Figure 1: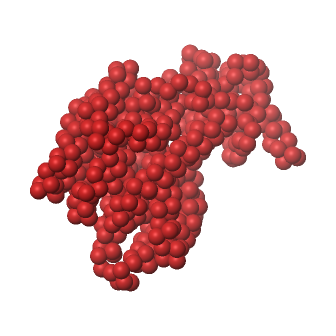
Figure 2: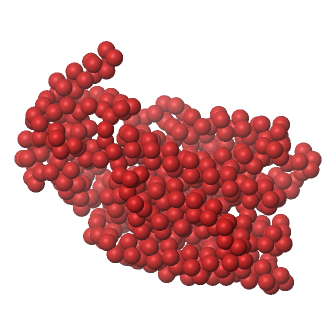
Figure 3: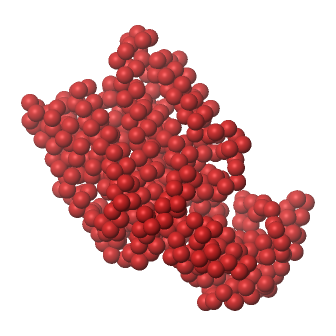
Length: 524
């Protein structure tokens, strides 16, 4: 059985640092409250001013980074941790100051929101660059393990007196996770195509990436919009918001653990747009139940919604990292574009929720108005984002939006055995593609046996058919450096050194084994 060492490996510096960052960030920007600040300063005007400033600046920082990387790619090649750390530190200082300087609480809330918005976006982009620059198995593992550990650290913060915790965040915790980025970034190879790339030299590659991924971003944005609406309700009642934080982090712990365990057992292919279509009827049904059950339903529903949203954010990071590796795209560009859409829709939901609550259309209890308005917005987003089932299931877009989590390389016992079979792992389906010829079948078998990604298998088959590096770059709309990087990875996984060895390896696989495997599956 193929296994990934995520559950058996000790947490790394990067996974621990990422976990600490997520836990600390949850105290300021998730759930709608500040669990470690006095409730006396958490008035409606204070929390509204902070979240309005923080949310807008947070989203705009991503969009600004996308444009900045496209026109000025040089600064994005370095890990400028201080550019995120300084505003993040100042933001927490402003929040602490608001607890003591009550007369200046409102302007300090706005200042804190602006600085924390810039700082948290900067740290997220730094983590994204780090994970994208690593091997998929390493980067994805650290990302998921960090997400799993974050709720544990978050709950541990409640064991520390509140008066101490609020000072530990900017003075101890923030320097620690910033240091983890600095230490890990020293091992990053900055000669990778994603860092050396100059976007304006081949804009068609970037236009194609945006065309392939915007629907995926829109699908996650739909959950973000729902969470924004529920955040507006949580801000109205800070006590409910505190419970939402606990439920959200607890659900994240379970979801990340389930994802790690599943990844241990089989390869995963996740299509975000398809997942949105599956979850869509459940989400709108839950919103329609909100007016029926009222306050008793508010906290668990919001916690569950934020759990889905948190998982979607991690999948967003994995997909953006995969796009950077596969296409040689600057990780800040694709992640900034993705996150900018998602968080702008979150802000739209938050502002819309506040507006609906203030209008009091259905009386003092806003649940009916919130439910109807949110269902309407989600329906519009579903219509715009999916483009019908035929468009949603088109082959080209499905390939671009799949997230791949591949366990390990081939087992040594069967690496070079002639006519080697490609038995699927328990619970894992055999390939279900249309094969052109014998070579196409052999490539599918090698892909399965050596755990190649879709893009690596695609390039391997095109190379076997005689395509050169320039021709591959032209067909796939990527840079030649990106093609060379994929070629090196393919050779490493296959344990070969030149093209002829790859052709010999392909020839050693008997396509009949694939055909016989399909028959045995049908017979079973």
